[in-house]
Length: 462
Ligand SMILES: Cc1cc2nc3c(=O)[nH]c(=O)nc-3n(C[C@H](O)[C@H](O)[C@H](O)COP(=O)(O)O)c2cc1C
Image (cartoon, rainbow, N blue to C red; front, side, top):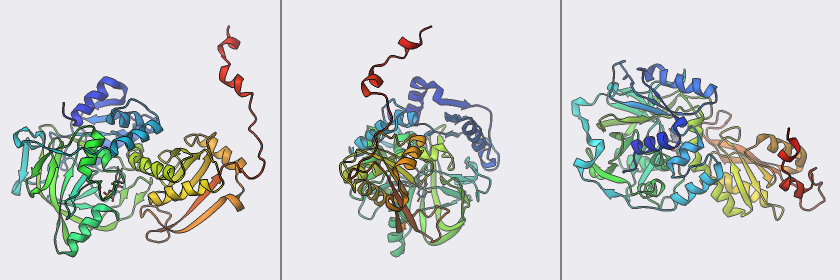
C-alpha cells in the first residue's frame, strides 16, 4: 500500500484507536469552529487526532474536503508515522535521525494512477472561497492554511518547508517565509526578475510533513530525504502549471500550484504563533494560484499554531539540535526542547568528563538553530523532561556569578515577542552540572543495591 494519509489513518485506527476521533457534524473552520474543538480537548489534556468529516468553505457551503487536526498532537502519533510504536522522546529523535540520513530517490507515477488528480480546477474554475480555510485564534488576520510548500532551487534541489498561507482573494494567498531556504530561493528568483514556482501540499503522509521541519543541508534533495523519512520513495507527477520543471507528489491529498510573485508584497497576519502569542501583522509575499487539484475526498492537515501539535511538529528540528550537541560533546545523553517550558528553551543532560563540556554542548545547540536562546545543562542523573528535577539541579548546583553565561548578538527568532531588535537576540547558558574540580556532596539516597533490588510488594502485602 502506498504511503499516504489514508494508510497512516488506518494504522492509527488499528494500532492506537484512542488516538483518533471523528467529528461527523458539519463545522465551519473559517468561524473558528474546528480550532475551538481542538482547544476544548487540549484544555482537558487530550490530544487525539481529530478528523472533521464535514467542513464548510469560506462562504459556509458544504465541501468534499475533510480536515485533520492534532496529527502531531502526541509523540505516539509521530512515532507511528515513522514506523515505531513509542511515546518516548529519545527513541523518536534517534529514529528521525536514522531515517533522515537515508535518502531514497523519488519515483515517477503515471498520471492515470495519481490519486491527487481526481479533480482539477484551472483558469476560471479556480476559486479559493470554495475551500475550507481555517481561523484559529481571535486576532488572526484572515483564514489560513498551514501547508507544506515545495520549491526548487535553480540547481534543481527540491525544498520542502512548512509555511503558513493567508487567504487574500479567490486566486491569491499570502505566504510567510522566515529567512531560510525557501526565502533564499525566492530572493534569487526575484533578483533575476522572475517569480518562484511552488506547489502547496495540503495533506500527505505525516512523515512527508515532518520532512518540512528538518534542518536538511543544501546538498541533500528534500524529496529524496522525504522518501527516507517515509520509508518508501516519494511518487511524483509533473505539475500542471510548470510541467517537468516542478514535480509534485502523486499521493498528496490536495495541491495548489502557483508562483510567489516577484516585486509584490502584502499585509499578512496577525497570526497566533507557536510562541503562544498573536504574532504581528507584517509585510509578506503574494502567491498567485494557477491550479488546484485533489483526491476524491481530500483531507487537509491543519496545524493549530498555538497548541501542542504545532510545538510537537518541530521534533525534527529538535533531532537536528540533539545531533549537533552530541557531535560537539559526545557525553550528551538527552535533550528536551519541545516541552521544556517554552519554544526557545533547551535542556541538555550530559555525562560530563571535563569542565567546559556543558558550554561546548550548549553552544553547538545554539548555533544549530535560531530557535534556541536559553540552554540549561544538567548532569545525567537529572531527567531534562522532568522540570521539577531540572529546577532542583538549578537550585542546588548553580552559582549565578559563575555558572550563568550571557550571550549577545545571536540571530534570534523573529516571532519571539521579547525581541527588542528586529532579529538579534541575547541568550544564556546555565551550567547546572556538578563541578569536577572541587568536592561536591553526593545525593542523599538509599544504597544503590537496595534501590535496584527491592520489591515493594514484599513489604506492602495485605
Ligand atoms: C508546524 C510548523 C509550521 C511552520 N510554519 C512556518 C512558517 O509559516 N513560515 C516559516 O518560514 N517557517 C515555518 N516553520 C519552520 C520551517 O518550516 C522549518 O524551519 C523548515 O526547516 C524551513 O525550511 P527551509 O529552510 O527549507 O525553508 C514551521 C514549522 C512547523 C513545524
